[in-house]
Image (cartoon, rainbow, N blue to C red):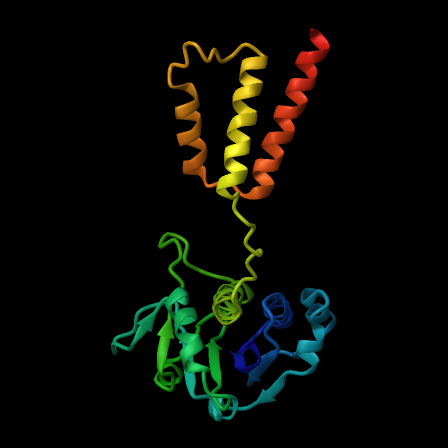
Length: 248
């Protein structure tokens, strides 16, 4: 699914932001990057430095002149918008976008493009109107400006979370094989052993039982112990008896 999600940067003016975007993408398993009419040299020493090992994504990025060239094969185009527009447009949160991705990418031919605008002015109205929906990151209203790579990181994270959820849903967790429960006969031997040990250490007086064994029986049966668990308990009882005999 992640292989069919493309990050599109329009009019990027700083090569470091392209490198930072590549790093954010690689962190989350995305690899398809398209650059639309960048206003800087895409591949510089700063790009490579900010990519921090993800510069192969920059080397493999496609550079085109128009948004249409970058998203022509996309079946869903979502534009990142930092502000509301005069013309109402479908607006979703990053979390809602992530939830939508598995269904959008159910077909092998499907492609999703996430479009980010210029550092100083974002996407134009004309560019946003070429998108199926707009995504807005709900930042602090008193300080809403996000670095380009940080915005990509947020959406890339939601993409990965959607992919992980899909993997968990399609791959049932391997449950540990069930352990056999203690049989009635094994439980009765345990109760006999328990009562004998409690008498030995002076905790239980059969002459005045005070329903002790009945309460312990009820407690144990309610727990439905496994055979292994019962064997552990009987081992503890045996060790207790041995210690009591040494003291005598």
